[in-house]
Image (cartoon, rainbow, N blue to C red):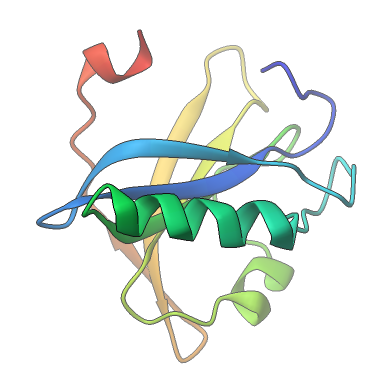
Length: 120
């Protein structure tokens, strides 16, 4: 919520397909309708993920005013078949998060198990 009205973005890493670490990455686009990750921060996060003996399991970004569904731009730019893509929407009174796999431009919803302690 700190980055509103702009989209926030970042990476998720963990083990056994479970996200355990959130890597906040600067949105260099500073836009309420798009994001572009700071590539130097991405490279550094990937180094640290490897050092932690974790693996990249997902990417996330927010939609400040839109539902938590992938936009055309999100689908076009999704290029990793194995990653989970999470979108957090602030469009309503209560934030809503959804997850997806995006394969060959096809959006496949994911079931998410969110542990409340991960927000503390």
